Length: 330
Image 1 (cartoon, one colour):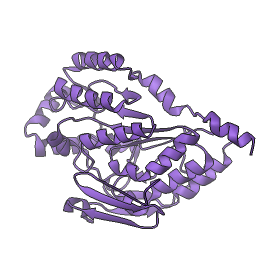
Image 2: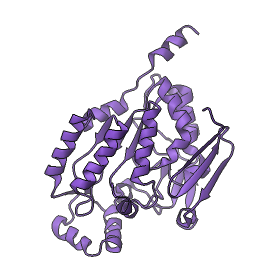
Image 3: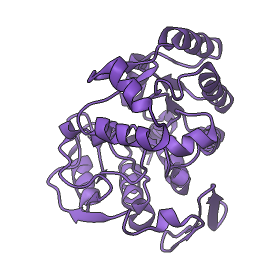
Image 4: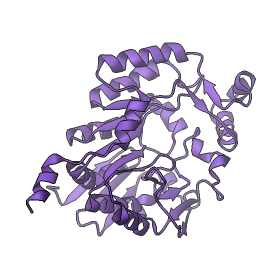
């Protein structure tokens, strides 16, 4: 990077990161993000880091507090408090060992279960260490987050994308800022995530948006959908993943979601109970209308909206030809 100090800000925090990656200053303007009682973590050595499909979770649990989070579901067997984040302390070492052994380069994915840029990452730099390894070994990256903390690692994302392919994915669910702070209380606002998407595009890094979940009776409106789509169009995203206008609820995340409905939307839990019972898939009554708008706008603006096509893109490794040609003559 041309500058020695990277400074960026959003509504809750300001980060100042030294180019040499030896010092990090974090200044908090909202005490809730500094509450050590709420944002606990513990450390664990694990045996493996990459899944069969080359995905990894550097952390288990999360401090973002999204009221709909599926990762709270008991089927994932997280055996500690969800906010007490498990840090896989040897993740970078395991990743380097795994990449060194691979015969073919591939895309490495992270963020699908637990956000790689939650609050503890600022202190620990585990995600950054893993990105450095991916970059060093010439692998591709598919990374998903809701946080603008990813901008701290823009230099690495650019370097990975110059050698292979780096795809940055962000989740956008709620256009209205006040509603966003209720549904996703400890993450960057949707507007800030939109700004991150634009920054990625300016740096030639392809982006994908997850338009999921959409909560019945809360953000399943045409106004909300068009607001998010306008952000995606302006940011020139590659594609939008959408599984329909709705959400999923199962044991573990259902109880937490209903607790938050009682807190923020009195009476709505009973409405969910009456209409959906204990169904896993919760579809909005406006699904058909909203999905028609979704497909029309995506196709009119050249945004890929086939989930299968996007997933294939995320999993397809691409080596830059200019890098390959240079290596032949070295």
